[in-house]
Every structure is written in C-alpha cells, then in structure tokens.
Amino acid sequence: MLPLPLPLSNKMMCDDNKNCWIYKSIRKEEMYLYLSAENAFDTLPEELLSNFGTPVFVLSMELTATRKLARVDTGKVISALQQEGYFLQMPPDLKPNLYFGD
Image (cartoon, rainbow, N blue to C red; front, top):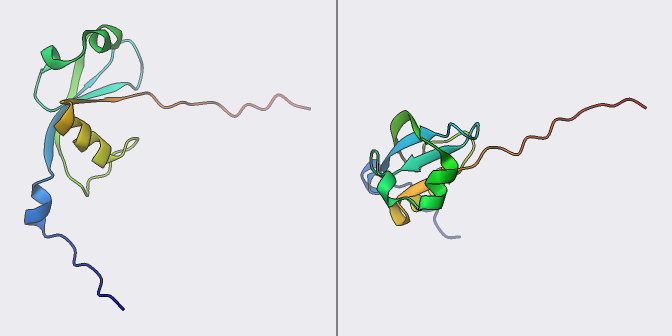
C-alpha cells in the first residue's frame, strides 16, 4: 500500500495565491469581471468591454487554492488571471420551476 501524500504547506500554497479586483457589469445582472491588476481595462478585448459596459468596482481580494467562490471554481479563476489577466463570470442560467397546474 502506497503512503498518502502529505498536504501542502502554507508556504507552498502561497505561490498559487493571486490578488484580483472584481467589477460588476451595469448591463447584465450578476456578471462579474475579475482582473489581475487594478483598473487594467486596457488589456481587455474591446468587444468584451463594450458588451460588459462601464465596470463598477465591487471588491479586491486574494484568491487561494483553499478559498471557495460562490459560483465559479477558484482554480479556473486563478489560471485565467495568470494566463489572460482577466476572468469573466457569466450570470447563472436561472430557470424558475413554475407550476402551471393540471
């Protein structure tokens, strides 16, 4: 039987930590834009920014591998921030469960 791997130390996990700045869209409710640098809108594709509208600052935070986000996988956000410099969180696809009677 192989031994189980030891958990990563906090020092090792810090290498994957990423600061981000989060903005909400004024055009689409529950659409959020995560940026790897504060107000780094000049690095975004023009079409994305024009469809997103004027970004409204919500908060800044440090993302870690252990931090849970409500609607998106933290690892995907960190990866996108490192590779692209931004992550676009789309609104949830909410479909109400309506009862129309029989």
